[in-house]
Image 1 (cartoon, rainbow, N blue to C red):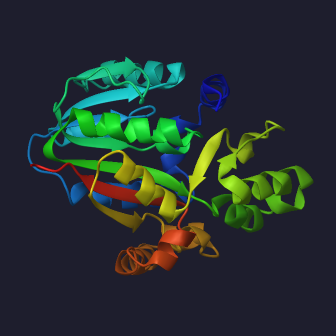
Image 2: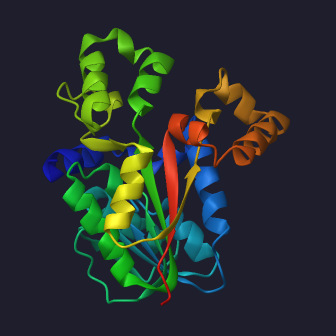
Length: 272
């Protein structure tokens, strides 16, 4: 993994400014918020690690939580700081930093969000270290919510969006299927950047190695992101609600976890 490559991608594309308001990413946002809401209590202290420009941080701040935002991309930190000032939404802290070495005290947080680091660290050792760091800064019985990208995401996306007809993208897919490590040697802005796409077995192994024994995996988008005519369905309230209903109903099914673009792993730090 090249931190420079990843930071250059985010700093240059500035995609995180409005990504969650576009197309199928709207589903990712709504579902992630739903899952977070299930675990919220009043006035929590929360770390949003890899929180980009603060989409979830400011949402949680608006609900009265004490939120610390950390990200590795300079542009994200600059954008979040600007939002905090211009919209008068003072977060507890906004820091440039590395998820593998958090600048926080032990047992500082009621909840930690990892919505990015685990799919931008291609070495298993780094991912386990990141999960262990999140565990370190969590209070006893604290909740870790961690997003990963599914191993077959680029395969589905390739056929869904027609990228598979580009031999360069097909090579990317074959590499993803081989070991999960995603590269974009042609620097196509739609082909993402250095990443790791998980299998469910990997998720379970990495969390266990990092010291978590209580965890649950949830399909974030489930089948929804592959729905034909997604935008039209999403923009129709009845159709959108029906889609969300069935995504919730099937969110723990291993098959739905396998086809979902993103998976949310919910882990609890043992109180013993």
